[in-house]
Every structure is written in C-alpha cells, then in structure tokens.
Image 1: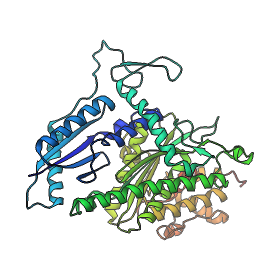
Image 2: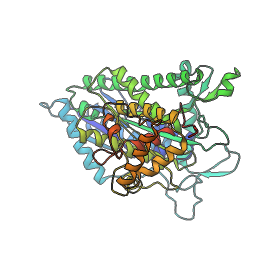
Image 3: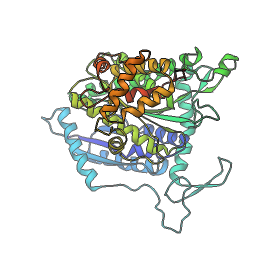
Length: 483
C-alpha cells in the first residue's frame, strides 16, 4: 500500500511582493522557488508553482517529509507557510482521480490548519523597520542602523544566491551591455523626470484543467517540464528583443551612453521577479509594460505552438515610489479582469488589461473604473480588456494619433468624451469640418467607430483607451503640433 503527499505553499504572493525593496522581493522569490529542492524526487513526484507532490511507501514517510519541510522553513525561510494533504492510494484508482482527492483533502486542511512560522510582536519588542514583525537583527547594509525581522534577514541572505543564479542564466543574453537591476529606481528611468514603474502579471488560462486531464505521473511531469521550459525561454526571448531594441535606438533608453560607445553594464529596464508554474511577474520601466506583456505572450505562444494554450496579462503602472504590493495587487486584479472578459466573450484567446494608478491610494479596480471612467450620460469610456491582436491594433492607432494630433486637441478630445452625447456630436462635426485630424480606428473590431457621430458604439468607446495609450508606449509621444 502506498501514500500520496501533496504540499501547497500559502500566500506566496504576499510573501514575495510585500516589500518596497526589489532586493527583498528577489530573495523571497528565490526562497519560494527553491524551498522544495531537498524534498523533490523526479521518479516519484513533481514540484512547481509552490506545490510539491510525492508518492510515498508509507504514511510515516509522508509525515517525515512534512516534518523536515517544516524544519527547513523555520530555519531558512521564516514567514513561509504551507498546508499538506496525505491520502492512502486505492488499487483501482487512476492518477487523475488521486490528484483530485488530494486537492479536496487539501481544501479541508486549509480551513482547519494555519501555520505560524514567525516570532510575533508583543509590544515590548522592537519592531522591524520594514514591516509589522518583531525585530531580531540589526542591519547596517544601507548605511544606517535598521532593525529587521528574521523574515527580512532570510530574504536578504537569499538575494545574493538569487543574483548569482540569474546572472549565470541570462549572461549570454545580457552580454556586456546590460545587467539585471536590484533597485526599483534603476530600471531605465531618467533622472529629474517623473518616473513610473510597470508591474506585469501574466497567467495561463485553464492550465490547471489541462493538468487534471493528465492520466499518469509521467504525463503530468512531461507537461510540467514543457511549461517550465517555455516560460523561461519566452522570458529570455523577451529580454533579447528589449535589449536589441534599445541598442538599435528603436526604444529610447540610455541614448547618451549608447551613442558615446559607453554602453556597459547598464541596468536593463526589465527585471523578472517570479516564475512559477504557468504564471510570471516582472517589473519594468512604466512605458514598457504593455509592449513587453504583448511580446512575452507572443513569444510563449510561438514556443508552445499550441493554439489551445492561451494567457492573460494585467499591467499596472504607478509612480516608482508608490507602495509596490499595492501595484502588484492591481496587476493581479487586472489579470483577473482580462480572464473574466475572455470567459464572457467565450473565446480561447489571450487577453490583456492595463491601468494607470494616478491617485495616492489605490482602491478596488472595479470601483475606480465605475467612478473615473463614465461619461455624464453613462457611456463606458473603457473598452479594455483587449484580445492581444486588438490591443496591438490600438497601439498603432495611438501612435498615429500621437504623430498627427496636437496635444491641445488630444486634451480637448479627452475632455469631450466625458460629456453628454450632444457635446460629443458637436466636436465630431468640428473635426469633419476641419478635415485634417483623422480618427484612427485600425483593426477589424474598431472600424465602425470611424463613422460614429458621437465616438461611441453600444454605449462604449475606444478613444479614451487610445489617448491613455499614447503616454504608455516607449516609441513615440504626442508632440505639440501647431493648429
């Protein structure tokens, strides 16, 4: 008689993305990615995406793995927690049924057991300078004395290992020109200018369903290998495209250094933070977020060469000093928004949603959009989320608007979209009379907007998205053109 063990790490997003220090997040990501290294067995199981599965000879062997994993977390990755499910296998049970039973048992465990792997703060303790936990160490690494918790200490120790690992992995792609940054403020932003950061969260669609369809452990392992390799290779391809576009002057970063021949060890304007299973999160300079999300999805689709496997992405753009975890949560919500649009339209396509956080405090995405993106007469001013091909068409529309419309007219257009239909119609007639400002509606999904008398169809419009996209692209900006 054998036993199955399934372990699921809890709340890994908060563990990885909770710090405003990129280096801490990178260390946390490394710990999550490697915590199962001493427990995985390719012959009898698999691991990935915060999960570990093992086939065990006995109940005691499974429990011993759980005990040893608990000890490893306490010693090397405090703050992480997990739930584990152990079941006795049945002779007439296939692999997919066993996995289903494990998931059911795991859900029961999550309702009744919650680990505590950190030292609580009781008021008499000094508090960590970077969170609410009790301070246990004094850190001088930033040039001043800071009290830090065991969680922050563990993440910073792991950050050095993460740096060594990723530098080896991407050495051939980065060459001598670029290096991967460990600082949110060093992602291609220009000194003295308002700097923004984009958090890109990409997740596969219904990949869990695909895994459940696997009939044996070997099939499951093979699918896992394919996905892991594809996710990694797509990132490498995306980094290569980014680096080439910068060096060739297509995307205007580090122009002075490149033109002077001093392009060496420049911080790449993209930094991957976490890849696990079928999802990836990376940060980049604000204006690169949307185009790099499109690039990544195109690259992984090309690598997998399977029309049935699609992805959704959420891109949240905020000022560089905005609380990072809030920006990440916004990106995660935008990815869910894209997935919901995909389900609503019942199309097996890749969808993307994006949002610029303009306030000092980020609140619920749906509430923000209900308040900020409605015209006086109730028109929904957002068309997003988009299928990836439609978004690429909108990017071209935005570029054309930026090249041919004066900033003053774009500002007027934005203002008019919020008004009643009669004022939108007046502005539409003004454009037709003027004759030199074209409404760019490239894309099969958008052509009918060109003949709309008030810029809307079916209580929606594409034009506010276009105007906002102009400021979220790396290639062109809307330059002031005399009227």
